[in-house]
Image (cartoon, rainbow, N blue to C red; front, side, top):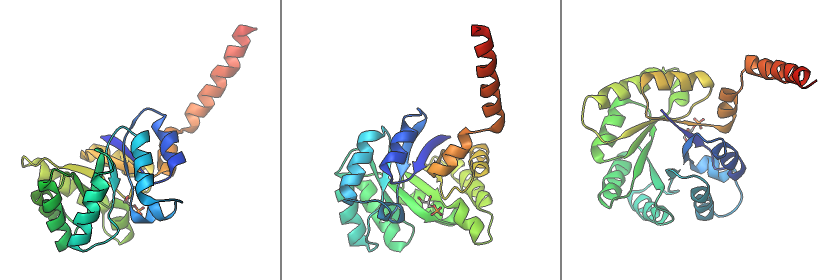
Length: 214
Ligand code: G3P
């Protein structure tokens, strides 16, 4: 499973990218609204930092807005993937953009049927929102597993991104299920790295190393 960061913050993205495992970035209008400056400029900056897909979402939600803004976003950099919400206009926009050779990520996916339709419309990526399903009293990981299982049975060229990840166990479970990618917030990535036994072990090795040096 590849690791993406779910963030539009340049410092967070740069710090995590430097750790060596980052394969891509997802943003959404909520994440972008937390940052200063021009949206397109921010997307360009992220593309300059990370060598992998950078997901950016049009701000309009009508078919015309999504295809026009989607093309403008795709023109910013070859690594841009256009995020499109799963609705009727969204499916049409996914088809339209994919026929132009523009990669799309069907976002706000909450069911296996939505995922199947997005894959058939030509989405390059599909993002089931695991945490938000849990919040609504559903089992987000179960829906993720259904989607992986269904799409695995057909020659669909679509990668599944476990999104709306809230804690490290979501990541472990998404990897066990076979999601192609997990897009993970900065704080959760930091929590994945640390373990108290690793910290204690490092402390002890440093202490004993000092004894060796005299
Ligand atoms: O990028 C989309 C998704 O990961 C949002 O997560 O935490 O707002 O449900 P969250």
